Length: 329
Image (tube, rainbow, N blue to C red; front, side, top):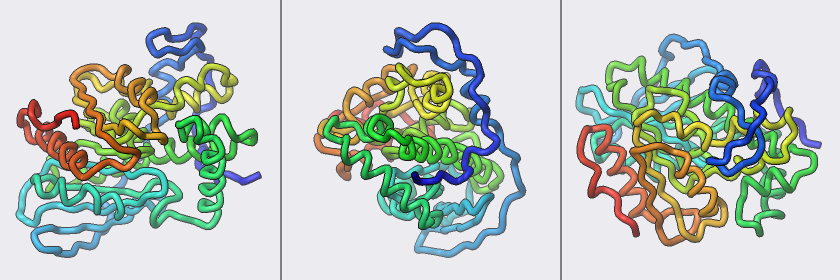
């Protein structure tokens, strides 16, 4: 059995859950209240702005800083002085902040935005030998069950020891808290317009982005690339002890709390990692304004989709119309 580090220390224990299911969400079992879900992601102490290094790269300034618990951030903005709208970028499984910045950072900077990225737990500069072993185990479990076309669901249903499921939950839970720390970093900066902050997540990072958007009102707009909610149906049949933790990583229970902040979902028609029903489930749970666009392809989106996503979030954060920015491919 693989051991899971104490990522979950100090988290809430499972309280009593409501007695009824939720027919709107399509599940029969009880759903934790919003107060319970918010309490699960308890607030973190805000710390002083850390020391940082800065380098010039053409017309871009690149800042690097180390926050709490070894969390490192890369913050990039145009070199001209000013207060910039900013986008927090959250990568997917097996990715890194550098890899995701190569995909989307230039697209956002070119539109006059600042960009910040962090590594998810056990990824990038936070990799460890034990973390690599646990990720390999989780992906092996997923690979055995991926014929059903749903990576996360296969992790939860195909591992009798729950090591893979526990790792998935831990990455999302701690990743959301880390993303809140990154928002603190942005809010403390004089070169950031703290009233214009968006989040762009991809795959597993989209789960974190959706949860963060529901929890933190500092998030003004959210883009979810190849995202969905594969875990919500698993609440049916889960033990009471497992139900709150499953609910806490089910983004459908959070997007309904965006309270008028806009959401764009960009999905792929042939995606076998996050299937269409998981994407539609998450989109249906969100309130307006929202938009979902589908591209032909698999879990890797084409460049056009990333361009459109960057244009959409830039338009919202800069107060422009988004009517013509995203079209169905």
